[in-house]
Image: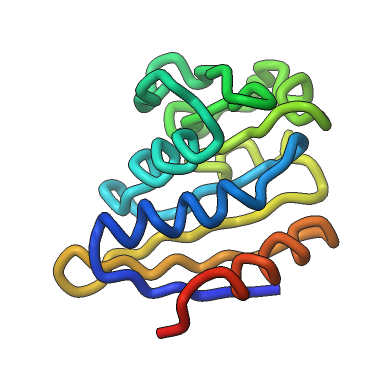
Length: 156
């Protein structure tokens, strides 16, 4: 399934993240795609807040992976940008499990390590502070999440 959501400002991006966060459960793998400055880390922070992360989530660019305790699980935030042209396995399969949530920026650099099922979110800048979010599901679980999200968000 594919769902496009056009937002006009950061407040609407936060609202979208909270709607999505309410639908996420343990075992969720979310791939975030978009150019530098598109808002991947900001969206991750909003989703983290919705999931109950109390600490400020910062970009793990130099660490690659940062983990945060949420209300019901651990949220792993990965920024794989620095892994371009690398085939190093940092034990990714340990993070892709049924208990935790993994949010991965620049997933193209670790494609061979990704699980078979995931949700992809592409963020593109539009006019002003606007963004176009394109959600794509890869697996039945994510079809259900996107169907519910589509029903929960106000139509444009």
